[in-house]
Image (cartoon, rainbow, N blue to C red; front, side, top):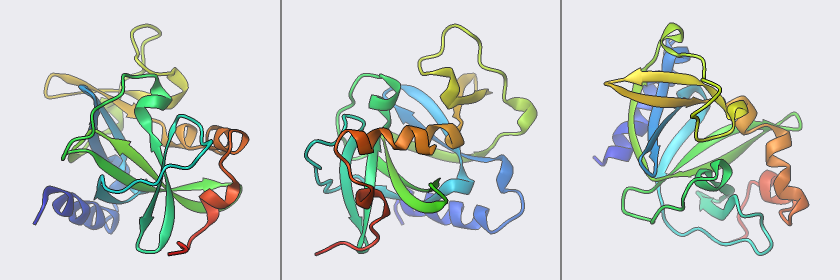
Amino acid sequence: MSSNEDLNAQIAETNETTLINNQYLSFLLGNEPFAIPVTRILEIIEYDQVTIVPTAPERYRGVVNLRGKIIPVIELTKVFGLEDSEITKRTCIIIMEVSLDNETIMIGCMVDKVLIVQEIEDDAIEETPALGTIIAANYVKGLSNIDDRFFTILDTDTLFSAQELIIGYDAGLSQSTFTSTEATH
């Protein structure tokens, strides 16, 4: 069983329990550690064939075909203004559900390496300081010190809000890119 399969099983098991509010998936963008709540995660897939969408904004890597569904893939390093990362065998796409205009859609987030699912209590998440953060403060829920390393806990409601995702519409992605559920091939 691959590590992604192990994590997918752990996420599925976690989503079936009542303790999911404190469970976070940690990952790396470059050497920077981040975490997002598992409540939004459907699965983790290996980075494979991503189809480029002409005229798509820079933050969109393209789309993937996931069992017949077209999923847009966001490159988080572009959203956060981080250095581009090299695609490696550890590069993954985290498939998440987000709400857009009262509709639930799936979106993929490209990350450099998925780490583990871990419990982070609310009182272990510290407020983000005004200086020293590498990404816009509105995307950050807080910081958590885990094994002597600070993880940036992302605010997925803001990061994947309609306002943030709609930026793609104005730059060439049609709404059908986001709401289309069936691949044509």
